[in-house]
Image 1 (tube, rainbow, N blue to C red):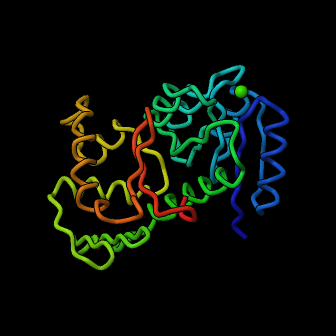
Image 2 (tube, rainbow, N blue to C red):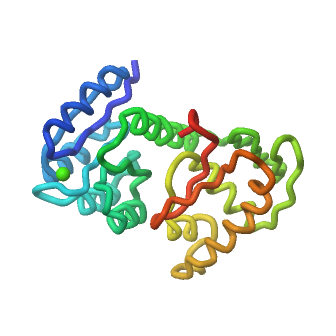
Length: 232
Ligand code: CA
C-alpha cells in the first residue's frame, strides 16, 4: 500500500493538531514538527513524505529558509501556510520553490483542494500527458492545438508556451518570476512586465466572451489558471 504521507511544520500547536485531525480523516498519514529545525531534519532525513505543509513564521529556522534548504535536495510538493499580510513572503516562498500557499486563517476545504492540486501536479510531472484540460479549455500537446468550448484558438508560440505552463500547474498560484523562468527561459529574467502583457493577450483569446474566466489574477503575487470551484 502506498499511502500519502504529509509532514506538517507548524509551531502553533492548536493549528497543527487541527490539521492533523483533518488530514487523518481524509486518509492521509501525518507527521508534525513544531519548529523549523526539527521540521527540516524530518523533511530531509526521510524522503518518504509525499507533501509538506510549511508555516513561514517559525522558531528555530524560519519557513523560507527551511524551504530553501529542502529544495537543495528534494522536489517534494510544499504548500506554505502564511499570514494574510505576508505578500512578500508568499512571492519569496513561491520563487524559492514552494508549490502553493494558503493564507491563515484558512478554510479546511480550500487547503484540502490545494493539497489535491499539488499532488495531481506531482503525478502529472511523472507521466507524459498529451492532453491538458481545464473546464472547456483543451491543449493538445502533440498537435499544438488549443480549443475552448470545441472552438479552435490560434495562439502565438509564446502564448502557447505560457498557457501550457499555466495548465501544467493548474489550480496553483504562480509568481511572475516563476512564469518568466518557465515559459520564457532565463534570457528574459528580471523583466516580469512581459508576463502581464502576455497574460493580457492570452485572456483576450481564451477568456474574453466566455462567462467563466479561467485565468485568475492573484493580487500582489501572480496568476493562476483554474476551472472553477471543484478544480481548486
Ligand atoms: Ca507560526
